[in-house]
Amino acid sequence: MTEPFEGIEPVRYEGPQSTNPMAFRHYDKDRVVLGKRMEEHLRPAVCFWHTFCWDGFDIFGGGPFSRAWHAGSSPAEIARARRAAAFEFFSKLGTPLHCFHDIDVCEPSDTPDARAQNLAVAVDDLEHRQAETGVRLLWGTANLFSHPRYAAGELTNPDPEVTACALRQVRDCLDATHRLGGANYVLWGGREGYDTLLNTDLKTELDHFGRFLNMIVEHKHRIGFKGKILIEPKPHEPMYDQYDFDTATVFGFLKNHGLESEVHVNIEPNHATLAGHSFAHELATANALGIMGSIDINSGNYQNGWDTDQFNLDTRDITLAMYELIRAGGFDTGGFNFDAKVRRQSIDAADLFHGHIGGLDALAKALLATETLLGQDEISANSARRYAGWDSALGKILLAPGTSLGDAADLAANQGLDGRQVSGSQEYLENIIKRALD
Ligand code: XLS
Ligand code: NI
Ligand code: NI
Image 1 (cartoon, rainbow, N blue to C red):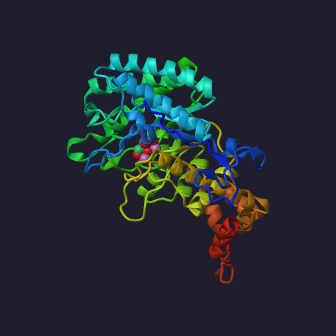
Image 2 (image 1 turned 90 degrees about the vertical axis):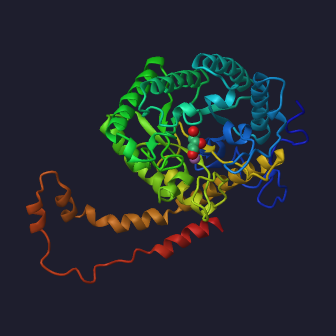
Image 3 (image 1 turned 90 degrees about the horizontal axis):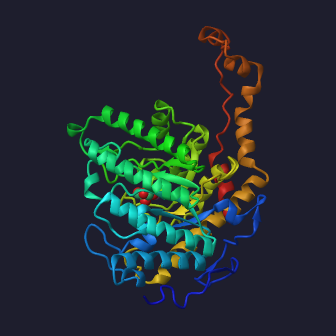
């Protein structure tokens, strides 16, 4: 194999004035922000699938990329070259974490046994590379959506043979993630959902999903995996309706199956917008419900409404989310995984660096803006003023456990409340965000 990133030097921080496209302008990993190093706040991770596996194919045509590591003398050799290229990339970019699907890191296999064997070889190799470079695993996941057997679902498939196969894959990948010291294990229910209710028993599928998720959580405890199990909400694509629609839907499902303190969410901005939400909304909801886990950072675009998985350069949008993340305490086991890909015409290996450098700089810029916002937190101060009434005697009585609707109704003043309205100050507040980014 030719050197995958020959001629590319390790990426360094050069400061906001730099015009070097191969340098960071804001991401200075050791800079202390709000009491922690930037790298510890952001916990950036590079994913295998978009960056090292994808050859650029889309539904209209084959892959235009000919990456050095896509060729080799055998499928096993190509998989090894992919892992080698990935770790060279992580080292040159200087990111501390990575994420993979089981099938991203090994060669294709015909049977579950062959897959398990190939995965075991890959895990030995990954373990060695992690030790050598210090790069750790943010999360692993089983790809339960690409193989044709999963066309009608994974854990919710109408055929128990297929579900058993999915469970085998999850067991093997969760074990592998545990062995590699993964901080989380992700379930993205790509095909958990349906295209038409005419062939779908929705209640049965949801019951099965709950039963098998409980089984997965039991296994996590049995093997002593300390990381979090995360569900990644997405409303549709590939299915017309997916069960893990958004964070609130996932929470309802978890509650229904007694899993709300066991399973958290992996939020992705592009999935949030597909569900009709903002990125910040999904974070605020996850924080409010106590199920915040990790983030797959990317963005869609305004035109087509697909999961286009672009690198997110919208610092305003990220700042709104970062503010929600940091004021709630920041990541615990989570991190920012770049679930993002370069465009199909970006055929050079250098393009992979440009994508990640821009994405990471946008996160760093948003983190710095958040530090400014939290400095003299006018947003929280405004919010405190807005809700201050609830500390009054009336507020306390209304909220007291023994207060009935009748009691509460009797306390309503017999007068209009004209003149009590206060401004929502939205433009003032939006300008504060803008100023923090200027
Ligand atoms: C697809 C998802 C996927 C998961 C991992 O839309 O984002 O990439 O993150 O299976
Ligand atoms: Ni994702
Ligand atoms: Ni996605």
